[in-house]
Length: 327
Ligand code: PBG
Image (cartoon, rainbow, N blue to C red):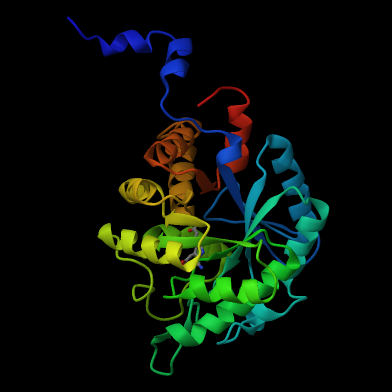
């Protein structure tokens, strides 16, 4: 036999040498959920192991993250129902929960790379990412000034990157211009470039009680059947000034990650979303699969597909496992 591929798999040392991609804590971004109050650690039923934290507890968890070598986090707010309205006004309040949390994190840990979320849905009584007309249509251009103002509030609070997750057309350019006009030329934009209308966001919407109150998100989030359309979104976001392009969800969309990684010269992020996390947790709890091995394999495959960085609820635990063995 001329070729014996197994020869290169004979030992762990050899497998480490021939490994084509790797995962490290430095590639990971931990999503975190913040709630109002003090001393709050609220378990999230649909995401075992994840909690909604008040700001004091958030600081505790971020300290641990940094010790584990995870230096990046993406923050999401859980807004009280009575603070929600149709325009998501709470998102623009400079002393609202979210800007306060950003300020506290960046004051305590300036070395943390903090990604803030720009979208209306956590603040909106309609649960949509854009403003709704009386007859239930999403008002794209009317939403843009709100997103830009929200991004400014977050940049002022100290966010390193603002991350528009709303999928309105033209929002990256609109936000970039608003930031630059106010002197925030160093605040980056992580664009949710190819964000699909996915069923895998279910547990996250539970965690934030942010599910749409009517209809669905199919007129703005992408059709899961489409790949070329992601290239179009990538071209637009890049031309509008995005610094990082993201594909979301992760695991069912590896071909899209690969397509963007090959066609763009921008860094690529993948969002390993709540539903992907919940599936592994649930199957692991039942003993149907090895949770740790499946989680690490997921991260490995996202890297192999071309993701430079991964937003993942596994970040903290993966960083701890990585201290024990390389992937
Ligand atoms: C909404 C937003 C969603 C997620 C991040 N930002 C949900 C949605 O679009 O309805 C989902 C993240 C996850 O499922 O982990 N702006």
